[in-house]
Length: 121
Image 1: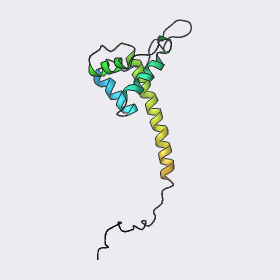
Image 2 (image 1 turned 30 degrees about the vertical axis):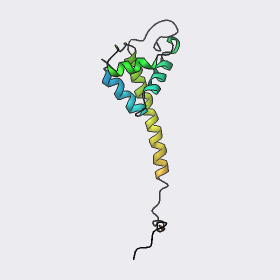
Image 3 (image 1 turned 90 degrees about the vertical axis):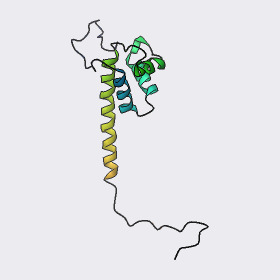
Image 4 (image 1 turned 120 degrees about the vertical axis):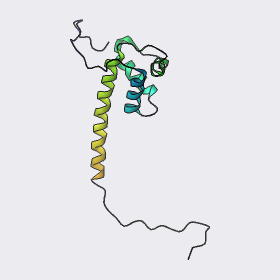
């Protein structure tokens, strides 16, 4: 797992989402990655597992559907995904706010009449 130190010890405590339920897996996936979350969450958990290798997408589907038991390592990984998602959202919010500062009030654009229709009087 990604919480082991190079000397083989494990930290006393790590951020974790306790007692992960299928609803938690789905909620984290949708909150961070949107409605097409399965593949992205699978890839991120696989990356966080580092040397343990990738996981099958069917594993995440199974966790979210309640068809497979959720391993203990998923709680800390979901906490990490939430942290990263929050950071990404804050970064994007800053970009949106910077762009919004450029918005000006202008007169509405001229609208041309629809084609192939006689003008209404």
